[in-house]
Length: 360
Length: 228
Image 1 (cartoon, rainbow over the protein chains, first blue to last red):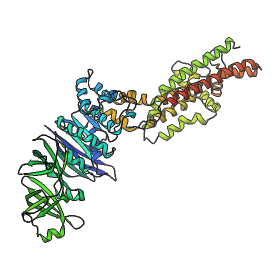
Image 2 (cartoon, rainbow over the protein chains, first blue to last red):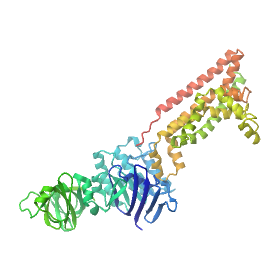
Image 3 (cartoon, chains in turn orange, blue):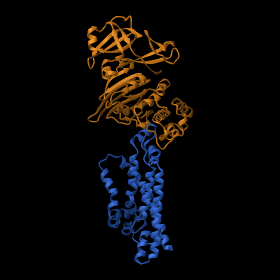
Image 4 (tube, each protein chain N blue to C red):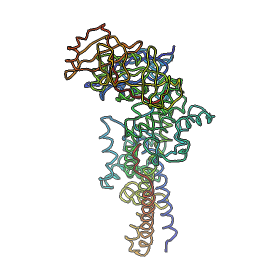
């Protein structure tokens, strides 16, 4: 059974959590929500750091917790890796000893080759003899990720691992996380309140609000739900998985394809065929009834309106289908009325800007 | 000069202090750990009881111990039932009294050191497969090292310096309960000021050098570990 079943009820009076989820047993699942939504509490329940009054947890066929049967594996018996918001390294141990702390406890003969691989993956080879106090925030967090992976976990839990870092440090770590994404075959549960991280990392998205699941499913479905997009206000966006088809060096552009069409992007340094994630903000998408003949905008695509909803501040949020892809557009309510937009209409979308996320 | 009788009291004093300090560390460590972690409503009560010897006149503590450990006391009846006789005016009785009297000097630095270790460090260890006892010995003890050092030194020196409790519970029996502080008192009573000077000087030098070593060591230790 390649899946995670988690069901928790927890009552703290002013805050209560009521969760019932089935998540895929592979890829990165992002638990997204504002502070107080219960995302960290959910992660702590899965780790056994918090014991809910009522809970059932099954990871890939093995039951870790079943309060009806009185089953509760304490944290130290759960084969998991946990990355805390603060790196939480042991200050009295060197980087090497921090990495080996868990490793020594899973086996008498530590697999140093595997550890070396993890160390290389996270680029911390030259830090091994340092004490944690002499590391930068970004380095500390990379060591913490390596330490969690060193115990060969069956699931990796990450609690806002980038939240305590400035944006420069975040950009330093994201490529490593993306690499993990490719190389790890275990499921990752990743807690964040940053939409940027959702766009860059999520395969599956779970949106939490006030201790309840608001939406859960594959990123391509969940991110485009209008209720979800409305909750994101100005920053509603769509992520497309595309592949590089052609470089146009004279224009400093790269053309990428998706099933049913293509887009032009600012030049991306990568081989033809490289898969990419691109993010299109709803505010950068405009709608025309006929194919614009003279426009400076390169990316014009035929689309069909699927759903229309009122958004805040005189805006309308439109969900469109572009070949196999879903796209969100934020336009003014006045434009929507003037163009007399209706569900099912065939229109053209003009995409003003596409941002390329890290390489997959 | 220090006579052989005086030397015996010095040796006895350090023997009492060494045994009492060991017992206090064994007893005080779990107690301080519990006090630093518990949310239990008994915490305040236990804290107050442990700290009591800090404010109580030693003679009061000694008096109650004398009564309790005597043939009519609860502890006395128990030790008699065990076939150990009664504890007042014996070496064992002196140890028991010393442990109770100096315990706050061991518990309080330990409790402070344990409280400084964040819950996150323990949680990190648990996610790395360390059981609670494993975590205690590999994370808590090394991080609380300055606390253990302070506790051991304060417990030891305070036991060396005790007088009132010894006099009440231990009396003045050579090679059994006659410690340095009592011997200095004996010398002064007998107007043997020279001998009193020698012993008092020994204690002064000892206490000062131990404290000096302690503060020098602690200064070079990174005491405050902000958990990062």
